[in-house]
Length: 251
Ligand code: ADP
Ligand code: MG
Image (cartoon, rainbow, N blue to C red):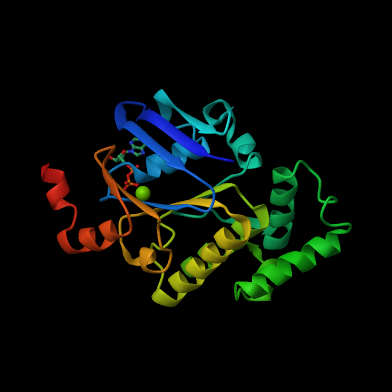
């Protein structure tokens, strides 16, 4: 079984310790929510898992089965099946969504489109079917990656990317930020479908409970001041919604 195991992870930036020992085990098809106020270290955790060079690991381990992920480059991590949806997706003008997805697919599956698709046209048809399934406007596929797309559209395209890449583990950092309720529902439906079809494990990172109404977590962890201060089942979401983080901050 593919297990993502984070053990006693400590992370700092150039001059500041941010994460003070995070431990977490995520298994296939599990959805874990990481909740916490602004500045608690949620994005730092996501960026560290993805291999962002600004974040230096000072202790601990991240393993995908027997693989030491921290030893791998960001590209290698993606190739091994880690996917990160950014809080702020970058625009890549001049590279169409279709072409970007093809390149990303080839990178993920070792340059080999041919195992599953005999011709590029078949891959394109597959992407179009997925897009249709996620109710994404087919015209988007010909446009520049994220270029001129609304916040909701960018997030939808990220979910399409996730579907195409079939990651083992996906990290969604504030995927709901700036989205209206219809966009959140679309994105959540996409994520739920991917988990069901591919048994991908997911870390849903959010400071806000709303997306968790649509992506139901199996486990909830509260991150405050760079530490997981409490973990529980889905009922913890409702409890936090009522009492906020203040009670936990005072402990
Ligand atoms: P969250 O995503 O929970 O809002 P972040 O992980 O973005 O929190 O930030 C946690 C803390 O680390 C904040 O105080 C932030 O200013 C600091 N921080 C994050 N990234 C950097 C960085 N690249 N350089 C310096 N400080 C950073
Ligand atoms: Mg953040």
